[in-house]
Image (cartoon, rainbow, N blue to C red; front, side):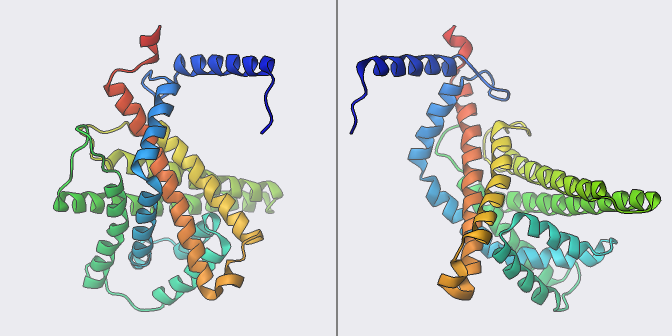
Length: 315
């Protein structure tokens, strides 16, 4: 291992001390004047202590089991929403955020599911599908439990009711987001019809509208999870640093992993037809990991705020 000369070691140490002082005396919006250093220090302690990889694996497993009941639930709702081609727009939105092979697997499964005649909104099958769809959210809520006086345990009934409510909110948000994408398409095509042709600008505008809605979907959905999910004695604010982090990195993770699988992944060659399911599981695991990181960021801020650590106290 190369030896660093003395003069460089002194410079590095001086820079390290300056960086530490800056982080100890600086905060960010939403940090309640808690220093970046204290939040980061507490965050990494919690990461090491709480085995977040295990928690992320449990969440992704629950979401995988809840995936197909959720599809049945959503596509049973679609005939009751008076919007033409809603199912096509829903599939296109999934196509944007899922790896190609994972989407193809889901698309064929969805086609098989919706080809079977389902009962009405009050049928036993529909209600059972909604119940199983909540299992994924319930697993997520359990992963937010902390052994600390600031957190309280939900009983089985209260936990299930909380999962029901949050699942309903997320489904409603997803449908509204699809409707916004449809409305954006209609408006752009209406302008294009008035002008007389569909310009390159119109196509770019459609893509921009779609991605704005997808980003808002991620941000609002994750903010809902952090607002209603943790069993704290008081709730976070709706807009949180952890929610912002998780929203940005969920989108980046989905796009990055999708690009890797589409261009370099050899899952199908190695594992055959089951490779697409493995891709889907890895995608869920990565996003579950990001969700827990966002939660731990919020937790680190609130815990430091409660014990009165503020960068103002250092001055």
